[in-house]
Length: 331
Ligand code: PEP
Ligand code: MN
Image 1 (cartoon, rainbow, N blue to C red):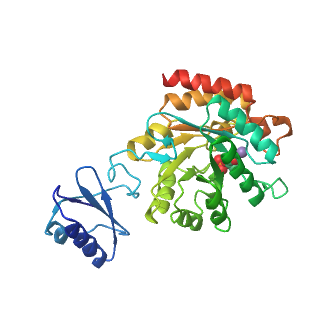
Image 2: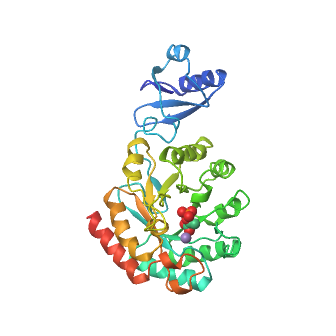
Image 3: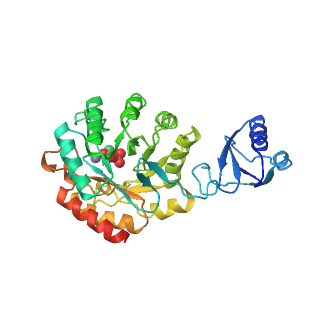
C-alpha cells in the first residue's frame, strides 16, 4: 500500500506516518516526488488496515498496490529512473552502449579492446574478472588482478567499467573497482548477494535468469531496492525455451512489458542470447527498436583465442557497424 501525502504535508507529518506504519509491524519507505511524498508500506503479507493512517494529518489518500513488488513499480514511482554516473546517463532516452570482452584476460587484451570500442562510441567497458562458468574446469577469471586491469582501462580511456560480482565474498572487492556491479543470470535469485547489493553505493546491473519470469526479475530488483540501493539497471539476456536455433531466446517482449510496470531502465544483452556473433547486430537493432535503454555487447579483437565466449564476440569492425546501425535507428 502507498500512503500519499498532501502537497503541503510537513516532514514531521511524513515521519509520523512512517512511525505509525512501524507501529503496525511493517516498514515505511518514503518516496519523495516532484509534487508530493508517498510512503510505501513494505513487509505486509496481507491486506493493510488503513483507517488509522487515513485519519492522520497530512495524509491525502491510500492506494492499494496489487503487484507483489512495490519499490520497483511505476505505481509507486511514476517517474522513470534515470541513472547518472559521471557524464553517462542510463534511462534518459538515449541508448547507452556497454561493450568489451566476456572476460578480462590480460592488460594488453583489455586495453586493446577498450580503445577499439571507445573509438566506435561505446561509453562503458564490460569485462568479467570473476566469471560464473558452467564448468568448474573452464577459465574462472583473473579475480582481483582483473579488477586492477579494469581500473587501468578506466584511467587510460575514461570509459566507465561494469564487471560482475559472483557471490557475497567478492562483491566487496568488486565495488571498490567497478562503476557498475553486474549480477549475472545464474545469480538473479541469490538472495544474500541481492541483499548485499542493496548496501553498496554503486549501481547494479541485474540480469534476468534464464528461467525467470518478469515478475521474478522485478522481485529480485525489489530485494536490492528494499535494502536501500535504488540505482538498478535491468538486463534481458535471453531465456531458455524449446527453440534451439540460438543459445537462448531473446525475449524482446520483456522490454515494453517491464517499461509498463516498472520505472527502472532496462538494457539488452544480445550476445548471450544469440551465442553466435552474426546474430548480434539484428538482435541489437530489434532491442533498440522496442525501446531498450542500452546494449551490453561482447567484443574481442581476437575471438578465436578468447578464453570465454569467443563465438559470440563481435569483431571490432562488426561492432563499428553495430554502432552505426544504432545511431541511425536512434535518429
Ligand atoms: C556475462 O555477461 O559474461 C555473463 C556471464 O552473462 P549471463 O550472466 O547473462 O550468463
Ligand atoms: Mn560472456
